Amino acid sequence: MTLTANFAPARRGLQGVLVAPADKSISHRAALLGAACEGELRIAGYLRAADTDATLDAIRALGAEVHADGSEVRIRGVGLRGAHEPADVIDVRNSGTLLRLLPGWLAGQEGRRFTLDGDASIRRRPIDRIAEPLRAMGAQLEAERLPPFSILGAALHGVTYALPVASAQVKSCVLLAGLLADGETTVVEPLPSRDHTERLMLRAGVSVTRRGPRITVRPAAPTALDELTVPGDPSSAAFWAAAATLIPGSHVIVEGVGANWTRNGFVAIARRMGARIVGEIELPSSPLSPDDPITTLEISSSPLQGTVVEPDEVPLAIDELPLVALLGCFADGETVVRGAQELRVKESDRIASVVEGLRALGGEIEATADGFVVAGTGGLEGGQISSHGDHRLAMLGAIAGLASRRGVEVEGIDSVHVSYPTFAADLARLAT
Ligand code: S3P
Image (cartoon, rainbow, N blue to C red; front, side, top):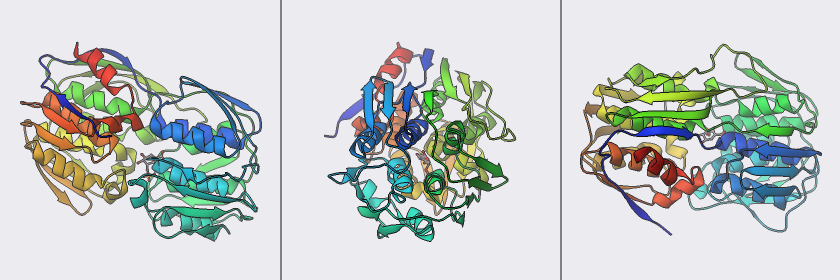
């Protein structure tokens, strides 16, 4: 089903206080590690959205007991080596994170066979990036470049693997496989990427160390995690930070936002453009800790200048780069994003879909091989945009509509259920 929605220009500034929806990345990881533990894990504030529900269904199919009562989720795991062979294909739906993380755990389930598949967007997302390191560890995969693919659980050995691209999904997959290997596993990152897997593993009593770009895990069964509260998702909060920045007269407070420095590149970029975002973010120099810090962001509208986003900032703001393009349309001067070729293999080709979408609204934006260049014109006219089934594109269109002169019709707004099912309700709260 594809739904269309209209987002009229906001008549006055956005006002109010919101609690950010739960973090998608942390919810996936908590469920997967919970399934690999033997005791019970109680998760408060689990993200109940299509992507993270797919993870709950996947771990159920693997034998974990899952009780979900709204955002309170209890998981009784099967233990590190106890995943059951499921009767059917595991359907990851639209979730790239589940597609890439789960195989790390399954690769070491000796003698059992698992097949993973997903929706049309998943069938365009490369899995050779996980197949290569897993095979180096001894995994047996029947996999080409794209899903579906199968894993036959095997004995694994530790490796040192240098990631060709900064990808938290690939890093996490290898670290999870490392728990089942027969020696240490080290992942070398070209640039820092989100570190929630490392933090949760530390919390679960696993030895994980980070020395510069090298992250090393020692094989170990994670101990019961007991209780965990998932912080708010900075990637979801970023939509309100952008909206409140662009719509004159806005003043919005978003509470409970994850302040992990590996996730907050957008706040740094937006501030550099002139955004008035108050709130403390963790420092990049902070040691690896088992906790994900949280913060409150307070955003007021402000004029913007263009900026250049260099490749080293990209992994810290990867899912928010479409919003940087939107801010760029309203800014004074040029906004350039470089080194973001990974955007081509997200839920949509986000270089093509952002450029096509913002152009249709009157934006002056050109695609490059590894990003885009926006000529700021101080605003957007409005028009029609397609989400291409990509949740972040749908929300980008909605915010663009509120900030535009004529409004925006978003085709495929229903895709917001992937990460932010309460998006419309939160918008209504801020807009009235
Ligand atoms: C994610 C990592 C990122 C990000 C995705 C979620 C994760 O992907 O784009 O939305 O939870 O690990 P890559 O690691 O492939 O860059």
